Amino acid sequence: KYDKQYYLPPTLSYDWVKKETLEKTPIWCSVDLRDGNQALPIPMNLEEKLEMFQLLVDIGFKEIEVAFPGASDTEFKLLRTLIDHHMIPDDVTIMVITQAREHIIRRTFEAIQGAPKAIVHLYNSTSEVQRRQVFKKSQEEVKQIALDGAVLVKELADEVEGDIHFQYSPESFPGTEVEYALDICNSVLDIWKPTAGHKAIINIPTTVEYAMPHIYASQIEYIHKNLAYRDSVILSIHPHNDRGCGVSDAEFGVLAGAERVEGTLFGIGERTGNVDLITLAMNMYSQGYNPALNFGNLEAIRKEYEGLTRITVPDRQPYSGDLVFTAFSGSHQDAISKGMKYRKENNVKKWEVPYIPVDPIDLGRNYQTDVIRINSQSGKGGIGYILETNYGIKLPYKMNEAMGYVTKKVSDETHRELSSEEIYHVFKEHYVDF
Ligand code: KIV
Ligand code: ZN
Image (spheres, rainbow, N blue to C red):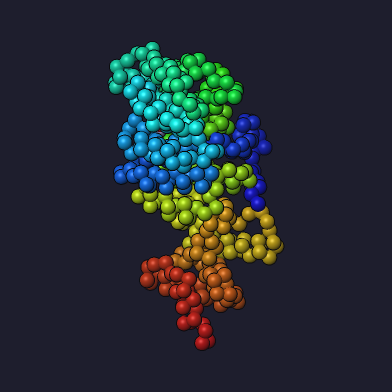
C-alpha cells in the first residue's frame, strides 16, 4: 500500500541520501513517564502513571522509562506498585534513571528490588559550560563522576536478583567535546564490560537541540564508529526539539548508526519536547516499513493521553492533529475527490491520493468527517464530494458548480465552516423543489 516513489536528481553523489529514511525498525524506548512527565505543569499522579504505563504497553513499547525514583515519592511508589503487583509484562523492560550520585543510585536500587528485569540509566552532565559555570570542575573530575557512578551501579546490580542492564548518557552532550564524551562512554563501558549476550546501552541526547540534524548525525556516526565493545553495545539517541528538528535528528541519527530511539508520544517533554515517536513510527509506516507500534486507533490514544497529561495536541501535529488530513481549499478538494474516485473505480490498492500522505483509515480516522470540510475557500469538488459521500447525491456538472457558489456564499456571509448537515440543508433549500 505504501511504496512511495522518490524522484532523486540523476547527479546525486551521496550514497546515503539514497537510503530510505528509517528502513530498519529501531528499538523504541518511551520516556513519557519520565522526560514527558517531568515537563508537565501538573505531573501525573500514581493512578494516571499506571494508566499511562498500560497505554504504552498496549501500543507495543517493549522498553519504557518509568521513573526517576530518586526524584519523588510518587516515582518510587510507581515502581513498587508495578513490581509488587506484577504489572510488568514479561516482554517489557522497565528503565529507571539516576544521576551519578551515591544516595540517588542507592535509592534507585531500592525502588527496583524484585524486578525480574530492568535497565538502570546512569547520567551526568558533561558540557563545557556546565563544567565551568555549574560544577566548577575539570574534564577529569566530571569524567570521574560518571566512573564512580558506573562502579556503584555495577556493584549494586550484582547484589540484586533481577537481570539488570546498564545505560549511560552524557547529559548536555550538544555542548560537550565529542572526543571527550566518547572517552567517558568508553571508560564507563570498560567498567561495565558488556557482552553480546548482555548488552549495555550508550545513549546520546540532544539535551538542548543546538545543532542542525546533519551535525548531530555526524557526531552519532563518529561515536558509532569509535565506540568500544561495539558489538555488545546498543547505540541509542534521545533527541529534543528546541530547533523543531527532533524528528530529523532521529531519522538522520538512525541512518548514521543508532539502533535505538528514545522519545515520547506527541513529542511531549522538556521545553519544546522530546522527539515525537508517533511521527517517527508513522513516517516509517508510510514508507512501507513496519514500525512495530500500533497507532491504528490514534484518536483514542490521543484522547486518553490528553486526559492523563492535561496537554492538548495541536490541530496540526503530524498524523495526530485534528486537521492534518483535512482540505478546505477548492483545488485541493477537487484533486482529493478525483483521487478518491479513481481509487474506488480502479480498485487501487496502493495509497496515492493527492494531498493526503497516508490513508486516514489506517489511523482510525474516516473520510466522511476528516478529509473534506467546507468553508468560504472551498470549491465545487469538495461540496460535490460531501453530497455524494455522505448523502449519495451525485450532481450534474453545472448544478454542482452552481451549488458550489451558493454554499461558499453562505459560509462567507456567516464567516464560519459549514457542517455536512448545513450543506445538505443549503442544497435542499435551493434545489430540491426545483
Ligand atoms: O535530555 C537529556 O539529556 C535527558 C538525559 C537525562 C538522558 O533526558
Ligand atoms: Zn531528555
